[in-house]
Image (cartoon, rainbow, N blue to C red; front, side, top):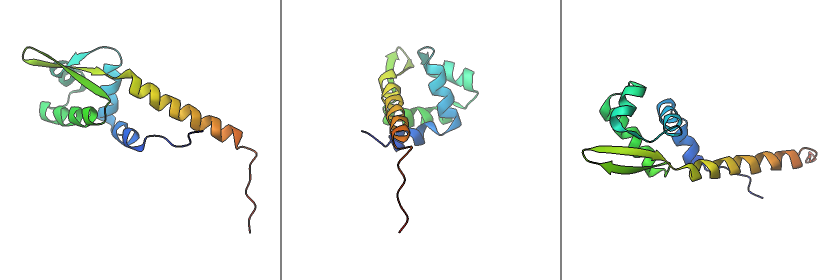
Length: 102
């Protein structure tokens, strides 16, 4: 049974702006312009965050003319959810386990 969670993905999602971006992309595929409008972030700041999200495997890009659209990779979040579910199940199963002190 898995008892750990992907720390790199958790670290990436720990940033409030990146979590906001992921939340927005969970609703629809958006271009950079839309994300700037929705988050209020500057274009350069947003681009840096999108690079981190791409490198973590959370989003994929789709070029469309002079725009870049971003799509959330739902399977990555589903995998993370499964890891947390397994961790919770392990905690429930170990609830009665107590190691004796020496």
